[in-house]
Image (cartoon, rainbow, N blue to C red):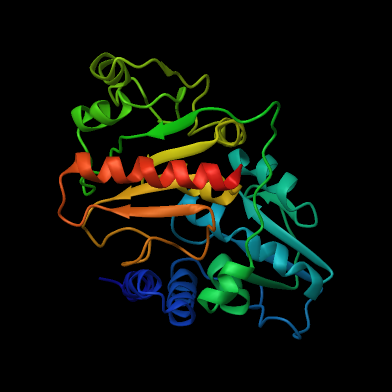
Length: 298
C-alpha cells in the first residue's frame, strides 16, 4: 500500500470514530501525495492569500456534497474563493454558495494559494461542534409543496449488506405515503418487482441522477422525507436538510460514524443500524424514525 493510501485509509477510520482534526490532517496529506497542489498551501484564516483555489482531490461525490460548505466559510478570509468541481455539480453548488466562483477542471485558473476540502475542514470543522455549527443547506430548484417519501434500496457496491426486495416490499406495503423512486438504475435495481411484491405504485425517476445532479436535487427536495441505504441519495438529502433515515449494515466500511444515530454534518438525518437484527425489524424502526422527523419538520 502506498503512503498516500495509508494516510487516506487512516483518515477515513479516524473520521468514522469522530477524531475529526486528526482525520482531516491525514486525508489532506494523503490527497496531496496523490495530487500535489499547483499553488502554495493555504494556511487558514489570518494567512496572506488573495485568491484561494479549492479542489476535491480524493473520495466521492457524497464527500463533496458534505464538505462544500467549507469553501463558503473561507470567503470572509480571502478576496476570492474559486472551487473546481465537475459539470454536474456546478449549478447546484453555485446556487447554494453564490459567493464562491465554481469552475470546471478544464478551465485555466490563476490563484495565490490552494486547499482541498479536507484542508478547509481542518480550519473550519475540526470538532463535532464546529461541524454541526457549519451546516448550510444546499439550495435546489423547487416548485410546490413537498409530498410523499423518496426511497433508494440498491447499490452495486458488493461490500454493502442490504435488505432484500422482499424485506422492502413488506414494509412499503403498509405505508400510506406516495412513493418516489430516488434509486439510480432503478430498472436494474428491481423496481418492477418491488412494485409487484409490495402492491404499491412507485413513481419512476424522470432523469438519470448520476448525470443530472441538479435535477436529482430537485427531486429530493420535492419529497417530505427520504428512506435510503447509504449512497449519494443519503448525502444529497442530508445536504439539502431533508428529513432522512439511512439504513446501515453492521460493517465498518462507510463514511458514517461508527456508533450513534447521528452525524454532525446533517442535522435532519438519522442512522438506523442493523445491530444483527432481521431486516424487517430494521426497516420497521426506520419508518417510525422517519415519520417522527417529518412530523417535527412540519
